[in-house]
Length: 76
Image (cartoon, rainbow, N blue to C red; front, side, top):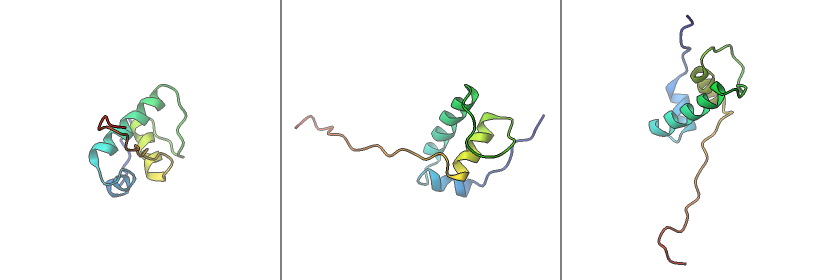
């Protein structure tokens, strides 16, 4: 059984605007995509989809999408 690789959290938090929640969501969504058959975008020999997703985030290959502010007041 392979050990989980170490990725510095400080680097990962920069990719998620400093939000641990956003980082967890980004890593979870990407690891599910990899588990479903998407090829990892970062070089590495990670066995686990989560490790591959974290490497992609660290390498800057996966970025957080910024939501645009929609008109939520109901007025036009």
